[in-house]
Length: 453
Image 1 (tube, rainbow, N blue to C red):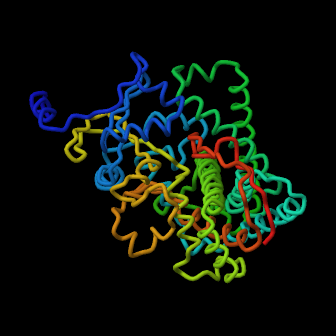
Image 2: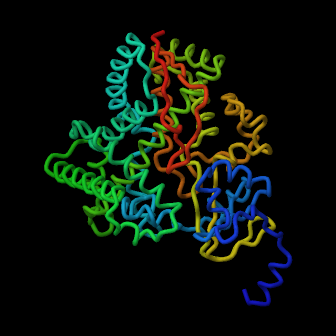
Image 3: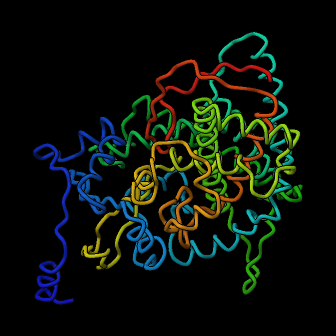
């Protein structure tokens, strides 16, 4: 496109609007203070909103059609962004951060580990972790001591992903993994809104930097030691063993040790915190909606606490989907335009940075009636098929849709069925606020009272 053509193109396209923010600083102070409030208010400007700051300018998309074009129909034009670059020191070139031929090759290797047929094998590790959690909660119910459900769901999901990755070959690893992954997530979140360049900030000997470096080193030592142990003694069915067994059909070469490390680290980060956060919000939403909780408990009782006994169209799964709508763990993600494009009537130039925000998209009144209400029956097939596919993107969409989406949803259903058949949870505080870090957590955790049913 020539300069003259582009000038005409700009004239014919819609003008982008957005909040003005502060002089020089733009909208950055608002994003740092309350990012969820800021993006929700920004959506009042339309379905494509410009957010300006000295760090970057973002185009916030709040239209299913725009999101569909970026994630699906023209996905080749949209690549990784500044945020993904900030994850690379931790995740390396795992599925979340890699691009091009490397990403396609790794996706082909990892995808079979998360096919529906493999989920029952991982449910074995979940059953063991749930049995340990239920023992703890029996004691908590008797003592009437409040339980931080956010921490408990995190511990549970770490045990599950450690089991899926390593089988039973990593006893005791879950606790250390959880502590260090949380340290890394908190550090990354703090760096994202900072005006100090990341490479310079990492050189400063601050307490946060030292904790971050220590967590990364400990996780690296753990992963590399488990890789070596699996080379010596493979564990059939473990995801790590599948990676080690892979051979390129053309060259016969296997995955390199560094690449295996990057994929394992990515699955640690993406495979436990997201599920734990979704489960946490689900327990709060059920407590706040007694009629829905009664339906969940009725299904769990009829299934004897076993998700395998649930009917195909079950309310528990719909409740999990609705929790993912209201509080999507990945509350936003971004893309970088590799070339010029049109989103509806809006021109998007090369090198534009775009933000997809499921937290706001999942509340768009054009797609969701009474969007703040918890209504699992939105996901009955007859109602769901009337919505645009990309109005609901808790796992992203298009070629880069989350590889573990089926795994996560199955874990949500299994966990809810088992726990709801035995326990009832009530929040201690009536004021629980979301905190938008790498994932959308309840700020300060979620204290709840546990009672046996």
